Length: 349
Image (cartoon, rainbow, N blue to C red; front, side, top):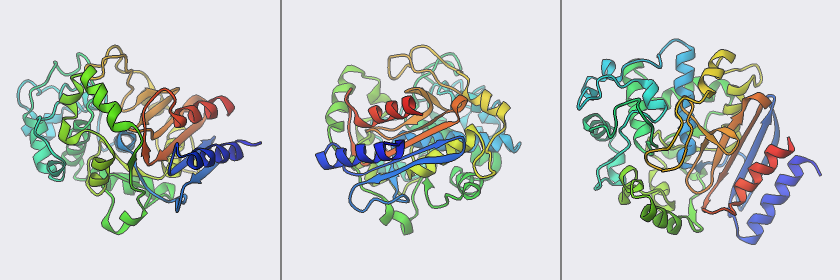
């Protein structure tokens, strides 16, 4: 049985058993799509899934493409383009600090709500006025939500373009995946989004927050990741998260790792820079080690980002391999079927 057939059989069985509800899996090898699988009622290759922090990979990629074109520099001081950010000891914070989660501003007010997230200017003002938890650059901690406004507003001030505009024009259009990579989904496309549902995610996060109290600081109760929140945020630009198809996410990473149909998003030299470990050691927010490159995480044998509840996207550039998995039934645990599927693909290719 070939890889495509094995993956299709696996996800079909998971859906039939109720372990998953709707799933897409895409795998690129050396610029070629070798797995393109969907399962679940009404799910097609261009169906869209709100995929939480998997969207951080879209944000980081947009920055690297801008840097490749000379439109932005990693060592740009944020306050030089966003003067309001120069408060409370943050004057020296750079875009590099933001990309590596070392800017020191992961915390949100405890009263924050999803309605606040719809107000871009309000959220940027909150980030600009925040007091850093550590001196920028001295350590790192997962900027679960603030990553998006911190980078998004810096890009907007420096280039006059939103991250959504960069994502569409510089990544989706050249790769032929317009309509499959989004931060906030346009109202005209919402019918293509597969609604999220909960398997055991909410209960697991509740338990984690009791064990790791800093999770409540970076994702307060009103914006704690879950199915209900994701379904509410799907049309809002929050570039710490994203909505996508698996084949589009895998194609984007394939075009970072190498060439796809004549398109390469960054040079080999930049690829080496952006995939080298930039911050290591204990993560302030999550407790354990969480190595980070320039915009991505080292995640399950790949460089990329996973999202709350089980979505996955990333690459292993040395092997010319990229993998993306999108799903709607949010789950948690050592027996996560999508993590096992990723491990299988990594071992099989």
